[in-house]
Image (cartoon, rainbow, N blue to C red):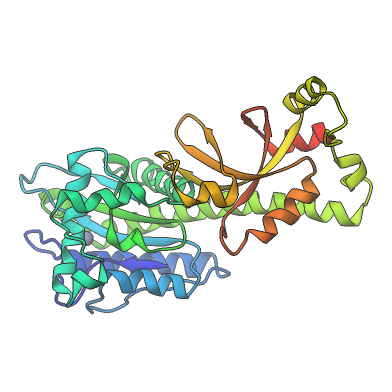
Length: 354
Ligand SMILES: [Zn+2]
């Protein structure tokens, strides 16, 4: 899903010569063409292909209705002092700096052009800092994928398009708020910066930006597909060979009640346990969240994320069945293996269990 920001009566930010709505539409159409021409099995959908006004919530709705796998919102930036330049890519979350909040405020303020924005966005006031606290509470299950695509984009901007890399960031963007898939908002450069405006106006500059995002998309697609292919591979081996991953050879004996307690503990500590990871977030889920009661959620703190898993199976086959039952509620859930409190590579776990 490619979302060219702004449009129609909403011109977005303005440089000396250009309007954001025109530049980001050109880049979006170029990006879509790159993908269609080179990866024909990908369906490209646009929120807009012409100069029309579109409320922010409708953009997310179009993506959700079409079951998009990735939402790419394309924008251009402005800095009142005219000094700042470079590109940055955002995933939805709570801002860590004032600068990140300012970008979100600017992009969100376009809802003031929508009729009845107070009802649509549940009283959200784009200019009030308090309003942004809700983004802390949004549990963004797609955060990891969104940040991974965002870093592919910034790598390409920096290395291939020679743009200044302002980094991967998080802030509360309403356009990403209701999307149910990995989603990013890309600030392709500053129209307030003379050279950068010239670059973004030029056909060649737009082409560099679009092809950088296209290459990042290709990398992301490969990464996502190799992960799920791996999953499929094991499932197939399960049923076709019948000896490598069968229930018998593949299962740890679950400790029974008859075992002495100390033995149970020893075995449990050393055992590989399979779980289903359902959420990852950059801040912890509060303990009073109903998910805890409903699912017996387990928190796993890693270097950059709080990961949340449910289920506890000693057999890969069983966790696979269990994960299918969760697909409606957690469409992006995936299987992880744990030893003690640590997540271990799935491949390693499957070898151990075998
Ligand atoms: Zn914008």
